[in-house]
Length: 276
Image 1 (cartoon, rainbow, N blue to C red):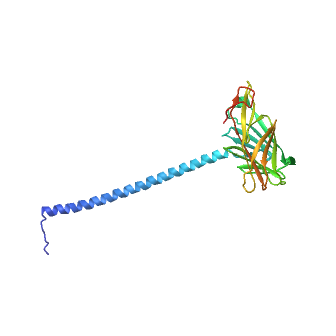
Image 2 (cartoon, one colour):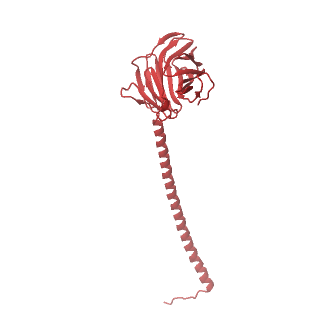
Image 3 (cartoon, helix red, strand yellow):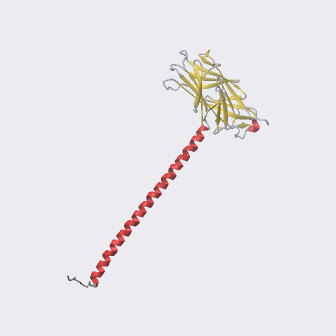
């Protein structure tokens, strides 16, 4: 058998070389693209891992910060501790009484103080109907503590806004006015306006210094209707006064304790001063 041989011309050889080069280039380009795609997937996976780790760490930090405000029971389970870093306050909570003091890291250790606020009675149209029970029922979780008396509840909630103290009156007579009567010991009280009080005492070197603002007084009934309310002060006696005409029980009366920072050089609490 004879084999047919033909000598390729220069033009034909050039065309054949071009075809071979194109195949090589196409193959190399495909490999490079595949490598780039693999690198992109790997980088994306790393970014996702970093993002997840960052989200997890942020959540851990948020949980730790929130736990600082949890209300901690004492051994007897009838008293609770509150720590409020934002407002530099500590609280000791028990049935019928709240004790406030400066936190250890507030920088005020040179001038220690305590404010004892006791619940005296619940008054309807100037007649006392309810007193705190010596043995109230206690309910608590991380977010709040409740002391349940026969006809009303003292509720405490601690967060960055401050230490909130709610009085929830579950039932009572039809009346025009409800008063929650309190007695303050340890500090003196100054009425700043209808919904804000300042608890203060004298500085060791003269003048006055405020430690607590008892403020943001709000009240509402079972239907969510806002009820006009204000503070009244007579000596060391404080009244949370609510216009209860036509209100539906239960009625919630809600003041807030926060830090205060004002001082005066004189001995007049009614002098002009700034506060935060």
